[in-house]
Length: 171
Image: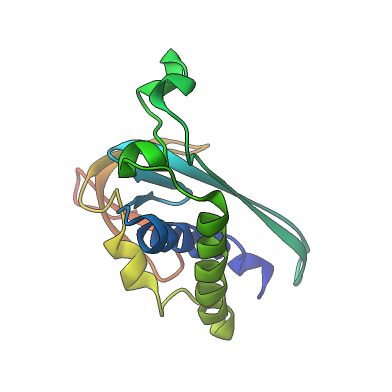
């Protein structure tokens, strides 16, 4: 893939985690675009993608996936317990880290193969959207240049979040 398409790997990873949580733990997790997985309204997983590239060549991509698995609520501490959760808290049972890891890797490989066929997320974008925690919700987007408040209405074929602003315009 080209360097410009590398950020889409975060979408690949997020979908893989959400699918693995269902297949391994029967836990319905949602994707908080682009790199968080939530369950019960709380953060369950974070994904960080780093890349080294030149203009037309990727040297490497590292995708870090951190899933809170068998933590209890008191292990998070008071400042985090209101916004974080774990697989065991949400599912009500202890999960095998090995089985969950294998499931994430298997789901990632399948989704990644679909992605690299043409460097596109189109083949699994509808499934990704169906697991979205933000579509249909009013959100605030903070960028380096400005802050926008609007309704999250779509995720584009390029993996960009599309919001409808109060004046009716789309960004």
